[in-house]
Image (cartoon, rainbow, N blue to C red; front, side, top):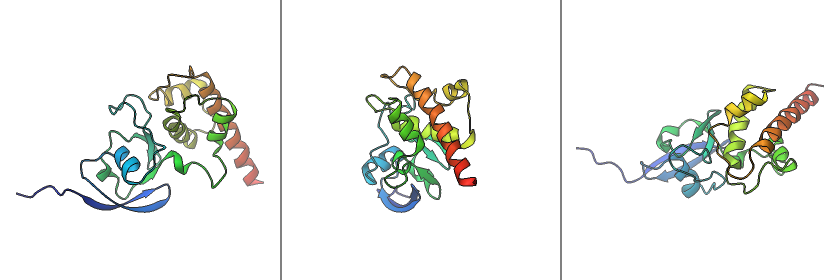
Length: 168
């Protein structure tokens, strides 16, 4: 009978950088990100996959990191809110959220930003209904969502402007 190891050692690609990490094999991706890699931008919310505060991108798709066993992420690309910015510059989503007051207490914001980024990677100009659908798994108790919808729409415009500037 094989004993379950008390720690596993593997490499995770987080925010474009390979990270060697050692952790208990039962840990969730959320726990590894926060406790072992000190990436505390990803928030610990309900731990049941119902609030969206822990959303990160795994291979470009939003995933609730509280429901993902970290072992499943070896060889996959993981992006957290810390990976959104470009050096000192904010990502257009972050800038739009700040400019339009879409973050109040901010606890839900990292998960919403990551979910919105995945949406905007796949749809350049999503409708308001599509935005609502995309972030429907992200709960916010402070904003009433209006500013969040507006910020995502504004970010889509900014990303489009950026892309047009690069093609000139």
